[in-house]
Amino acid sequence: MDVYLEAMRAMPFYGRQWGGMLENYLREDVYLLEDGAVQPKASAQGLHKDLDLHFLYSMCLHFPAMSCPALFVRADEGLIDARRGHIFTEAETEAIVRWIPKGQRLDIAGVNHFTLLLNDHNPLAGPVKSFFDQYLR
Image 1 (cartoon, rainbow, N blue to C red):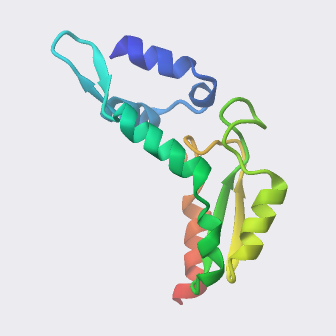
Image 2: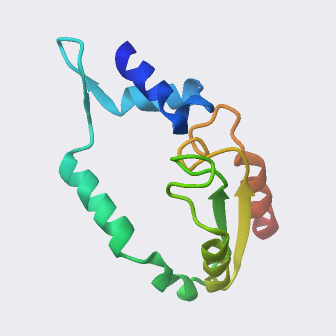
């Protein structure tokens, strides 16, 4: 487990945002085997299916039919480096928000789509609460 966590911490998309929440997630994402090795809980088949859906299916087809307010959250860093790797471009982000009838945009700086959620400092809590407060009063 220690070797695995050390390798994960060295990944550029985890290292800078490393914290307890991310480490707990990574520990729970693998099986610890009797010999001390770790094995991913996700299957290769499941990962391939996820990638196929990600690259071949467009959720955007459904956006115009949304009738409730929606908050589109965009992390501003990619996985490969700050600007590349699973990050919507400015044009894509603007188009998505326009396609959602009651869409609003929220950009979160200094995180990628992993560290946005698995962050000890929770950059989403305040902005998401404010969004819901607009509609739940």
